[in-house]
Length: 260
Image (cartoon, rainbow, N blue to C red):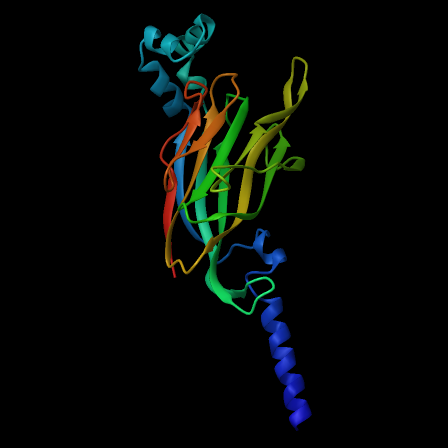
């Protein structure tokens, strides 16, 4: 009976390890049915109208060329159809004790996995390079991260699909992660891009020293309305901004607060 008890106890431990939310496989999969979400919506019309509300002189001072100013001012707003939703969620928020290397001393660390998504509800008219950023409170740094972007033929989800793994970059010593990607790929002369971005996801596992019971989480999407190269910066806490602002316009962060 004692032997049987030990075997059963071992099986229970194995199952607990298999289903632990800190396994590498679980940390970077898209299985986020238990995630908590906050979603924000933006449209291309909102983004371009923000620029058109400025004078030509202001736009020039922001770095636009005369031709780019002309493009903004003469743009037919009715042609701007793009509508985007982006969100931030989390799961596996837990503190655990770990053993210090080559020592018997143990200390606390906290893990949390963020799931940040975007989806074009209506296909964008402006097809350049976009950028997506995610951050948490400043105690956390990136442990692992991955990004995938889905493309469909002409942006039609009923047609062929292509999934692309996009490189994850970090800033502020790993306190912010971001990914740059083209909205369209495989340009066909006189026909436009064969593949259009429809949606994407950034999954990040973060780690912080000590016990953390509450943390702010944010994601933000930068959509290029002019053909310039976008970049991102992360401020204190969960502040995200994009540069150059004339190229990449963005709205409120998708923000939520994680609590144990």
